[in-house]
Length: 156
Image 1 (cartoon, rainbow, N blue to C red):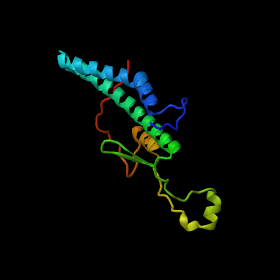
Image 2: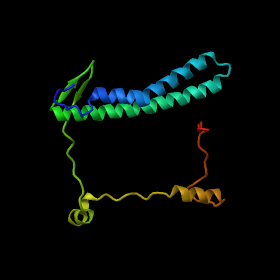
Image 3: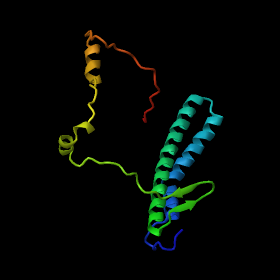
Image 4: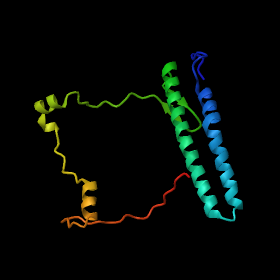
C-alpha cells in the first residue's frame, strides 16, 4: 500500500482484516457448517434450507465486503494519485465521471424548451385495479390472474 497514507488512515489491509473478522468469518463458518451438515443429513430438506440461508448470508456479507473494498481502493487511489492498479488478470482505473445534462429548474426549462419534455403514457393503478377485480367487478380489458408459485423463507 501507499506510504503516503498516515497511521490514522485505514488502508486496504486494515479494512480487509476488520471486515473479515467482524462479518465474513462468521458467515463462512456458518456456510461451511451447513454444507458439512447436508452431506450427513437424514433429512436433506431441512439441511438444504439451512444451507440456503447460510449461503444467502454469506452472499450478503461478501457483497458488503466488496463494496467496502471498492470504496477503500477508490479512496486510496485518489489520495495517492494512482490512476491505475493492476492485479492478477484485472485492472482498476480511475476514470472521469460521465458528462450529462442535469435539470436545475424544471419549470424554467419547460418554458424555454418545451420540446425537451416527452409526454408519459398513462399508468394503471395496479393496486386499485386488483381491489376492483377481487371485489367481483367486471373491468373491460383486465382480468384477475395468479402468478407463478414462489418459495418464501422467513426467520423464526
